Length: 489
Image (cartoon, rainbow, N blue to C red; front, side, top):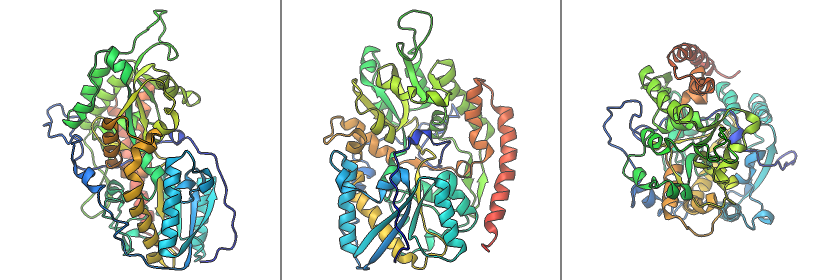
């Protein structure tokens, strides 16, 4: 494919944590009910010699049949995630991820006889505008577009995207594609957006807890790795571990994040979702006919909220509700003033590299990984003339990354060339393989923000707000589905 112009833009990396709200999912069977105190602890903790470890030994790219296409592969992308496709060799020194992706591009271009061509937009809405322009004018300028959750939904709802499940060259049920995304965002048997190993930066936008090893030892607490492996890492256990940790160390009568100690450091746009979904909470689901629906028990949400409320409000966590103070949530943890930090793998990579104290990484209780709203998705425009070609290259990239890039995710996260902490390495692998997406969050329905909004008020009750939000969300969802059922003009 020949392009009409070339104007690649370089944009500074956006702080993924500042992206509003969340793109989440429901992964059935990954977590026991935190909301039901009588739930049986069947647990699925991280196990040594797990299937996830066995999967990484596979060689899906090496064994893939290669076909020479002798053409360009044109990418329309987000400026803040450009290196997922356009790895730059001159910038690779000192960046393990970039070095790996430079090698991937070289290998894939040679094996398939293609040339990557890149176009980037600083604005997510501009990416949408270009996708819409291509769809509405029957153009074929871009082979693949990479969008942001809170903007690509417009293209999806307007029927401007290709159903990826119809592309035979995509093996979407395989492990190198995110199965939480596939199961939760398939609507009426159609899947328009996908993520997974093909986008390493998306894999890094997976929630986790970091903990301070020095404070663990000083407080005579046991690092939670064994709880994770045994299937006992729950919000109840977390609350017990952080109880009474927040203290006024210098005795001046004021607890200050710069000099005192907290059980948990967190930010309002992450931790309500991290804890709710990590504990197995859910708002949206998919009916037997493939239609998204609101499916949750009020009592279950209320019980989970009470435990989250206890962790953040009753136990005096450092809970940042001022956007201008966002940076303090990781700065104070890095300075050694919090036992735990509610974070994501990309923030560990970006913000904790120079931390003096040793830290460990564990999944969120109990055990599925919230995916921040800034995660990326790959998509094809509905007017794509050769979806099988596009699918073949995306499949090759996903397989290559699964085989050669994701296996080094711990080193990528911690900026280490060797694994110092085998426990955390094991946990990182588990975190990136158990991500969740919830259709209620994906479509930004009213109910998706009810936990956040109530925590911001500091009030322990959520029942009335939940009832109102559920009613509004059902109306919103019906409108979305009606619009999606209409054919594009």
